[in-house]
Length: 628
Image (cartoon, rainbow, N blue to C red; front, side, top):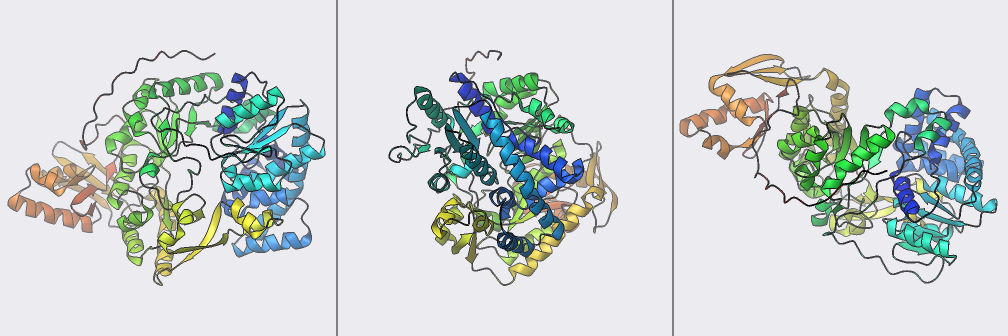
């Protein structure tokens, strides 16, 4: 349903289709968000570019205000309901054009609900399943209710992240059009539902399946982390046909296919980041057998002719660096992959990712302050995060990252430290800056008292989407919350300075560079970072050797082991301090790293020797067969 990305098929639909077909069912996958996207573009008379921006405004920029849900849930809102919600939008700086867009989309939504319901009933299906995440409850419930109004008597089931825990139970309790919800991973629950439906028996509550029939099921057991993830390859048949039917053929070159190779979070299983609510159903980390990863990518490339992939994994399995990624590299194709990763990786790891076609990553940096990272329980330091950004520039990987601020226990010193750091980094990929939100399943929401936090209410959009719910039920259905905590008085002005500095970084990044070129006995530095003395500097002799030694990062003791000792070390230390003042290097404690990046990135350059070499893995006998 809307508001999924229109250049990406739903992996939930793709996986469940594979499961249903394996059970012997005939399946029709319906990507209703494509129909809505094409319908709205036509009905509103907008150009492709303007509508793309408008769709992103609703689905992404106003997601926290539930704009996408409200458009569908309040298609028939009266003047008072509209004015009340529009006041919320204005209070959050939505302009008149945006409010007019949201208002006009209600009529489009009504047309879409009717068309979708009639389309789904054409084949008289026994089961209709909806996957719901982010702003998809409003559209999903609207279509489910319309199906019942038109006399549909089959089973309607909802799943997806919007159905986890109390959210799913509240949906089921207050929306009689829905027969069952799936609380967490849906493969086993969906299989159980299909088998009971095929047998003509009422669908019971069982495991992660929550039904209206029978007593509530006990909580499902978490999967064992020592077992590999066994999930079928998603089936995206029909997506491209529907893309053309909806009049969206012009989007085909931009399609990226979602893939999934792991579930859970190996870092979160050790130390849960304070703000993260992504693993409500299970934190235990499991990944697919590494020998199947390249085979799955090859299958999808061959079947759909798409070379760009988006891994929905919460975090990359580090064992894949030695197992799956070399096999992907051997495909020798010009594919691209996106993965979420942890930023305390070696440059050799970044190089291995790039050689396997991982061209963009979300590294979960969140802060350039070691103190702040400790409060967020990120398990990284500012030095490691900066080293990661430099490694991405060195090997041609795009990092998509954020700086979080406004969290409990943040200090002016941690914000000021970032202000100083970003002045040196304008040649690297800039971040977005984001105020913290308090998400269900995160430590902030599960244990707010540990952080001096008091949760006050769900974000204001929920009340306008579900005006019929009691305060308790509204709390149970919400995913995002507002909270209060003691915030240092000096934080606000320093945050504003940091936000302004990030905006400047984003605005001037294209004209910024700081590069090095290596000669036999020289290093040429070319500095073109805004606000810093620019030009070329030629380092020779010991200075060139020292700068070479800090490329990729090193420690004082490692430099001393390379021959800088005694008086030579004192001179080298003074040189490093001078380079730090010039913002040529970044130092944290006894660690130091060069801030210039190679003039021409290459994933085939030898990385700095860091860390302990990994042992070769024991080969696993496995025969891979070509899928039909």
